[in-house]
Amino acid sequence: MAPKTEKRSDPGDGVKYSRGQFDEYYGKKQGAKQWEAAGQAAPKAKAKVKAKAKARGKDRADIWSARPADSESKLDHGPGHERRVYANITQLLSDEHNPTPLVLLNKVVGLKHAKLCAKLEWRNPFGSVKDRVGASLILDGIEKGHIGKDTKLVEPTSGNTGLGLIMMANTKGLPLTVPISTRVPQEKRNALRFLGAKLIELDDEL
Image (tube, rainbow, N blue to C red; front, top):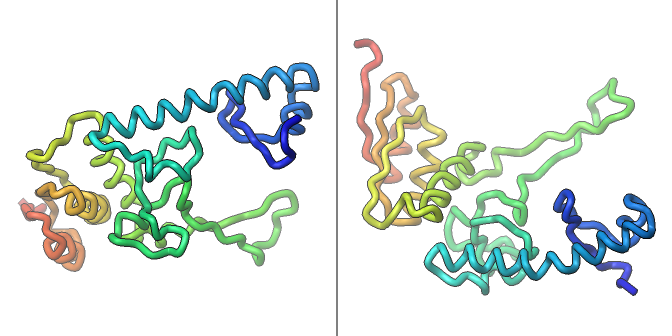
């Protein structure tokens, strides 16, 4: 008999459900089969995660130990995550274990059958959803072997993507060159330069 609090990932959609929810959705007989299949799949998913961690060149079993076995996150939020104490800015990036906050908009009128929430993207390290884009580009490139310790990164940007890239590039010790329009606000260009990016400023009037 499964504990009432136990949940398993449904092989069909990857979402975790209790034993009762399996029966409710599939019916009692098929629900029992799906429950058993979910239990057998969990160890395989955990082994897959560990294999991916080793493929990145470092055994991160200690980092992943507190995460769900089927987690696909590449981020390390550090040992102080529960207390919200971080060693560097990249540990603030959002993923399934550190989701971007949602705020219910209680005063919005005219919606009878829906709840409306605002997603607070300004909670990203540099205040933009592009922080996740920049970090993911570099982390994915490292995982797939396209980016190494001697790689030089080049990315034309109007500002926000560049900030996300230089944040992760600094963490990994990678140089970043940014071709950028002179029409981009001076404060964004200054921020990129201050953070260590080499700027190639392009005059759009030509």
